[in-house]
Structure formats: C-alpha cells, structure tokens
Image (cartoon, rainbow, N blue to C red):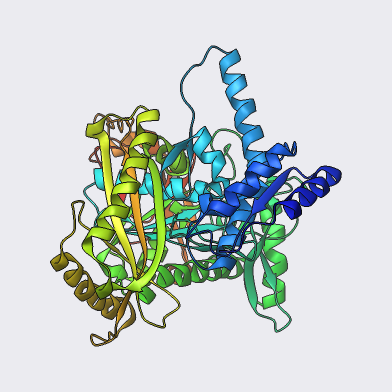
Length: 546
C-alpha cells in the first residue's frame, strides 16, 4: 500500500480555506476495502482548521463501483450542509416551544432515522416523499385485507407508481437523480410527468400530448383563475363534470368552468374535435402515460397486474384509478380515506431502518460460512449500538440479512434474502440454487452451470415504532343522506350521463353504490365509472370492483 501523501492533503486544505468551501467529499479508489486513507484525510483537514462538512465514501457507500460511490458521496456532501442546517433550525424551534420529542426523518428506503443519521447520509432523503406514499398504501391495503398492491400516487405534477408483493415493498439499490447515479436503497418508485397540472399541447405532427410540463400551483390550471391559459388535466376533469365548478373544491377554492372551457376549446379547434372529445382525449393520453409506467413495474418484471389491487391516492389519483384498472385488467381499486395525505400517514407508520453493506466480489462456492457470518455479526453489533441510542427495545428489533449475487461477468446483481441465523455450507449451496430460480423468473433464463459471484453482503435492521391506529368509520346513516346533487358527467364512448354526487364523509361504512357516480372528499375526488360497483369498508376506504 502506497502511504498517503499528507503534505498534498495539507496543501489541499489551504485551497479549501481560501475558496470558502462548505462541503468536502473524500473518495479513494479502494476505500471500500480499507478506509484508513480516507479517515486520515479527514483527520488532517480538521488539524488544518477546516470547518467544512467532510463526507467519506467509505461511510456513505462502502461498495465497489467507484463511479457510483463517488456520485453518491458527492450528492451526500452537497446536501449535508442544507439538511443539517434545516434540522438544526427545526430542533431549535421545537425546543423553544417546549417540545422535547425526538425528530424522525423519512428516508427513501421507506424507513425513518434520527436527525444525526439522516444528515450523515443526506442523499437517503432524496425520494422520501414518494416512499412515504408507498408505506401508507401498504398500511391501508393490509388493513383492508389486500397484500398484493400496485400503488398510484398522482399529484399536481407527477405520478409515482410502485409494487408491493405479499405485503413486502420493492426496493432498488440505485436510482438516477438529476442525471447522476445515487446508489442507496430506495423504494422502487417509477415516476412519470402525469399530474393534475400537466399541460395538454399539440406537437408539430398535430398529435395531442400531455405533460411532462406542468402548470404547477402558480399560475396553476386555467380554471384556477390565476393567469394560466393552457389546458391541463384538471381543466379537462372540470369540463367533463368530474369535479365541481359551483362549490369550493375542498372547501377552499371555486374553480372557473368558463376558463376551463376556454382552454379546452383551443385544443379542440386544433384537433378538429368537439370540446368534450378533446377533454376526454386529454384524460386518455395522460392515462396512457401512467399505464405504461405501471406496466414497467409489473409486466416487465414478471408480475401480472390482474393479480393485484390498485391503490389510487394523491389529490388526482382517485379520479383515474378505476379507468386505469380497467385498462390493465386489475379487478379491484382501493381509494384510501386519507387519499390526499397518504404520504403523511406513511411517515407516521414507518419504522426506523438502517442498512449496512460490504463488497466482497468472490465466487459463492469459494467463501466460507464463517467469513459470511463474521461480517454479518459485525453489522449486527454496529446496528445494536445505533438502535440502543435510538431507544428501541430488543423485542422491537428485526434483522434482515441479504446477499447481492450475479453470474460471473454480469454488470448487475440480484438481491436475495438470507436466514437470520449463522449460515451453514448447505445454506450457501441453497442460495446458489435460489439465485438460478430468481434469475429465471426475473429475466426468463438461467445458466445453472455458470459460476455465481457473491458481490455484496447486506444487513437491514428495523426498529419497530408505535403507529397511529386507523380510525374506524361510522356505520350509521344512508347512501341517500350523502347525496348532494346530480350532474352530467362525460365518459367517452358512453357520452354524457347523469350521475349522483356524494359527500365522502357522509357515506357510512358498508354503503354500496353503482357507477356512474362522483364521491367528493376534502382532499380528493373519487370517480366511479359506469357499471363499476363501489363500497365503503370499515376504515372509510372506498373499494371499487371494476
């Protein structure tokens, strides 16, 4: 090993001081095997009076693949001053109000962490919002007796889709953020530019497109009356009667039907269609974008959508859930009682989660169970120290070891679970067989005679948290008591249909109704298409059989 050039590091420290640098990322080529030089660099920089945040790649991502490790470390280093400053201000503000409760921060992995850990690897927060939505969808799905779920979180700008199988959330080891790889465990969410504010436009070939450009909150859709003139998905729903134009939406804002009609008519003229046909076309195009996204995370990964239920949430999700389910052959749609704030429920339902990893890149048949067990035991000791500091009792701790495997020469791995106990030679043999089976299922082929490599060992540790109870929905009342009006709705080939409009909070548990209908809540509106059957479950969720 070549000794570290300490003088060069001191010269670099002078340049960091002179440049007023606030964050430093330290990445050495083989630090995933030996972090000594990275730690020495940090020590020298501190001796030289550097006050900047210093982030070591061996602490952020002790894996091989230096490009991904460098990108992830740089992203973390850039975010740390921002995250640390925000969390410090938040802690101070809460303390000044006499609130002494610990702060937990949502991570992209679907778990929460304390402020120190969240700031240390700040890149884990990048997709924490969508991750919260998936956690919330699992919570309400399991409560409704559904464990195989496809989640659709449609807001104002984008739609996020994910898949839950057997109650287990799908994770991915790497995502591209702003064109750069971030290799950290994240909930596997596929995002497309399809939201209530997505703008409809005509391309040079005369075709109708929707998104990814969005009107945002300001000026917002044309119907907001804030100066926006381009037609959006929200304008189309308003024009077709799916959302109200005469009452405040969510009790806050009255939408302008005239402004929506003016925006839709511009697209209709360009397409040579009636305004209602153009508006319906906008919904068809945006749903085609979301349908493709759902196929990516289901069909293209070996899952049949017909075996799942669709959880539609976000402000706009329940307007599209039933239609998307029909196009994909999904038999059931769950529209949560908390549809507009389900990500917040997910945050409150998340457990403490920490992950540990070490790269090995060795033949699976050439490593001893003793070495594997030694590495996992080391992870476990480190995890127990963290959980002890977070106040998690031993009975609320779960340890989930896993291995990343590949055929020799491949550039990607499959992650397989390991038993939470000391492994035996027979366990490693079974692991190779399981890898061949999973490779066959995922990619359509396997090569049983090909050597298998053990690339990384992982340990995910979970500290179970107290979770808020889902409130039971009252059973008293009637469907008729929730009816507020009847209005005309447009459904493509079905044309205009008169349909009842209900207040969601007044529909009692056990209530049943048939489409077409609209069910309006404070945070979202549910659209029940013709011939669909809907009922309210014990928790106030609306479940559609489509």
